[in-house]
Length: 169
Image (cartoon, rainbow, N blue to C red):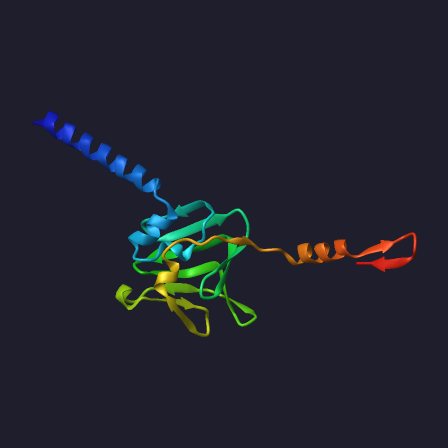
């Protein structure tokens, strides 16, 4: 009888270990779907992520900051953090949404009723609503050029012609 109990406990712990290793192999996109969120909230190119299943806290890492075009343009930092729960992300940092010519930090994302077809982005002062279908698949993300890169590319176009003493563009 004790032998059967020992074997049962061993099988239980082995099965628990297998399920833990399976969940460690999940992608961030699968975790979003399991939590009733669209997988396209994060762009293509996630290089690494951490997720604590107990607290819902996560970190997503990209090779570089980038912009992705949806109904609006979203800017992703190299490190995105927050807390995932059923149909929402709270305490979000690392994502900004463009409105007119200004960038606003996205503080949270939620899907109230999936059948409504809407997703809401909390940008502080207001809640922006978008079509849920736009976020069904991860988008390509274009690298963000820093201000120094823009300045250096402009400067490289401007040369001084030493032979004639004039500026050449």
